[in-house]
Image (cartoon, rainbow, N blue to C red; front, top):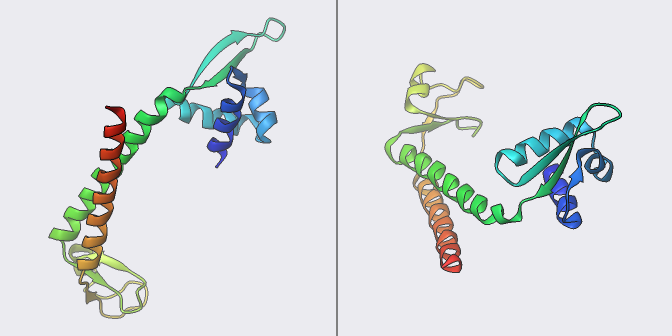
Length: 157
């Protein structure tokens, strides 16, 4: 939410804004603003220029929003999400899972074996999990994300 607020301010101004002005406009302290800006810079959503304050000798950074980067970042994040889901899907398909009857804990076979198939929270015997619903939910999420990416690809062509 804080990053969204800063991006909103940068988008409204459409020109370079100093980090001090961003802090004042967003009601955040300067350290928080800088931290967020550095994270946004890391993914190329913002760029900056640096100039030296002649009176104090400090550098003042002015930031601008890089709206051209948004579609690429969006696509990249969707691909990352798909890869993460595919990894989880592979684990769900190949692994055996156990759950506490009180639904407090779910673990794979190796961890369950380490606890002698007993819940470390309550001591009850762990039950095997049928994860067909989990697998189909993950498959549906992957399919939905792929459909979104296909639409984005069509728009870019």
